[in-house]
Length: 482
Image (tube, rainbow, N blue to C red; front, side, top):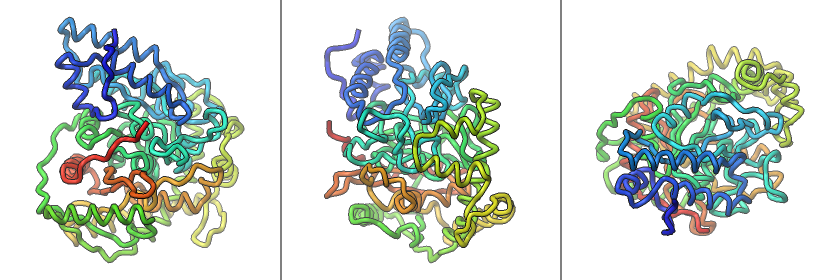
């Protein structure tokens, strides 16, 4: 039975939980019960689409019984996780945040989920998201409590949680779980963690399996892990990929590139925290290398949206037919509730259109061919050249130049979207790994501020090791207050 002693979920990392479970000071049932109680008490944050309390408690009791019997247990035995609702979990709906898929229940776990469940993890539920993952705010009109639209930020429920992995990051910020899975196409594994005060990894392109993920653009989409500290993110990544080693990091040898475009448009809260972070890291020997470059952003403009808008149609058609419920993309569109997502489908996805350099709506195919054959290779080569020329371990910048905006109907307008995705989009286009660390709380707003590092393609484990080293210097931020 659950212990009557309150479970200190506000401060528990995966490592903490595993230690308490091992020494018998905490049961998995008590832990799951505490997270479920928190989730139900704050349902108005719109974090969950499906909360599987009965299934999670049954799984927790089974883990507790196995532990008492001395049976072998996996490395995540008894650890609750939450999963973004565009990732398949067997027996639970996979709505992708849209009513058109509300009744779709996959029969199999996505491989990224199966890896964690094989390690003993317990799925608490499926998290809310920007509808069909097509946005950076999480202001989803399809699934929400009455009168409270969109996934809300636990640090200030009047604010957004970001998107599209909104609920996964907000669940961590609200301490409704110690671990989560999300997806990223242009920033969705980094923007919500930055706004909700948690850590994450967007893996290198193709490093994670893509089966069981509802797509936006298959050449850019990836699943990824979130947690409350970088060591936990590295643990989750290792269990998904089988790559366990973390190389040593010497802070005095670390070289981080600073590109002015990525430090632009910061609000006062972000600018103040970034100044403190830079001083702290320079104080332990980290070298910040000024990189006078304007080409990253310029090259990305020819790659980002042309790829997303062109791939969105065929990738979704194939998913619906082969992995989803078998409905047509037109039936999917008919069920979209969010005006911004409906507009994207009507203007770009269904008619196969994109914006050219002059802002005109044109056929997407020629722009896509250029992006794939010229634009993306040029962007990747440019990144490689900058890494080599300046002997960089990673690029560094604020994950988002602004703290979480207010949750209002106009929050998903292009000007807000552009700010939120300003720094996260280029590395996604190039297929580079990126990590997000929570590094401070705004003095005026009390909202989290995040730091991103983008590393060499395929060098995810070293990037995670760097994140752990930096977190040891900068510390962890305080949880949201309830």
